[in-house]
Length: 99
Image (cartoon, rainbow, N blue to C red; front, side, top):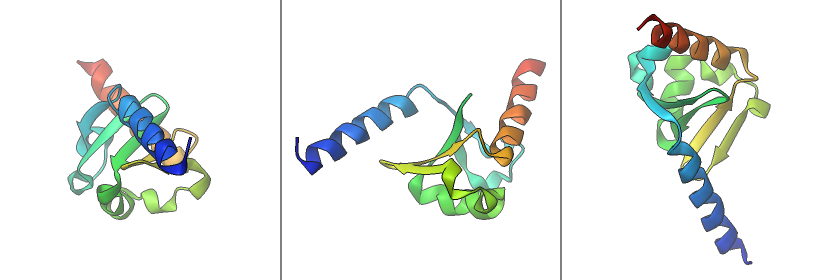
């Protein structure tokens, strides 16, 4: 396997994982609507790489330690090991459970 085959494989796996996540407006996570739409799963929040700057600025994600932030393929993933992510996921769950 060469480097480009590896990159293609990682991209394909990442896209597959994103496909299992729910895409929701940032406001449902208790964030400023200018953060855009985010992908949510129990273990993380993801954003398109080109929208990450807005999430960092308007959503306060710039304070998340880099060890909880991973860029893969076209996405940036924020782990639920970061308090800010946990707060957003809990807010989202409270809305979902209230339905």
